[in-house]
Image (cartoon, rainbow, N blue to C red):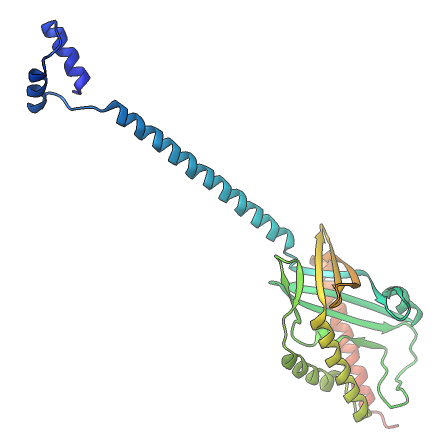
Amino acid sequence: MNQNEWQQQFRAANGREPSQEEFQAAFQRGEFTETRQKAKKKMKTSTIVIISVVSALAVLLLIAAGATGYYYYTGNIDGVWERDSSSFYSSKKDKWIDLDKQNETYGMDYHSFLNIKKGSVKTYAYYRLKNYDGLGSDESYNYVGSVSTAYTGHIRPMHKVNVWKREFELSISQEDFLKDMNRYIKDHIESRYSTTNYIQQLKDSYKKDFKNQKKERVSYQKKGSRLIVKGYNKKGKLTNKAIYIKRTGKAADKLSKAYKKAVNDERKALEKLNSVDY
C-alpha cells in the first residue's frame, strides 16, 4: 500500500494520527511505499508538453511533405505532348509571328511533339510540302525534298525537366551535340550532290543554334492537359512560346507512327536522289 492508505488504516485502527516514530518504523518494515504526489503531477505535465510538441512537429512535417509532393506532382510532365500552336518574336519586323500562318504561306504542313521520359525531353518535328512535283535541288545542287525531319529527333535528348524551377535545362554538351550532328548530317542530309560549302554552312548554323539555346531560359506551366512553354533570351525578354496538348494511348501512337513515316519517306527520297544522274 502507499503512504496515504497506511495512514488511513492506522487512524481507523487506533483512532489517532501516527507519531513520527511509528511512521518511520512502519516505513522501515516496508508496510507502505512513499508517494510524492507533486513530483508525479509534474511528470504528467512535462509528458503532456513533450507529446504536444512532438505532435505539432509531426503535423508540420506532414503538411510540408504533402505540399512538396503536390508541387512535384503538378510539375511532373512525363508523357507525349503535341504542339497545338506556337509563335515567335521577330526583332526585324518588331512583331510576333504565328508559326502556322507563316508555314501556310510557304505551303508547308508542320508537325511537332515532345516525348518526355523520366524528365528527359526529346523533340520530334517534321514538315511536308503541300505542293511538290518531284525531286528538286537549289542552285547549289543541294537537295530540296517534299518531307524533312528536324535534327532534334535524330540525336540524344537535348533538355531535361527541372520540376522545382519549372524549366527545361540543356542536358547535352556542345561536344556531344556536334558529334551527334555530324552523324545526322551524314546519314540524313548529305547526298552525292551536296557541296562542301553547303555542308559546312549547315554545320555552322547548327553550332550557332546550340550556342543560342545555351543562352536561352525555357519555362513551362502545366494547366490540366495543356502545357505552355516559353523561351526567354539572355536579357530576360520573351522571344517564343508554344502550347502543347497531352496525348495518350492511340493518339500518342498516331504521332509516333506519322513521324516514323516521315523519316522513312525522307530516307527513300534521299536514296532516290543519290541514284539519279543529272
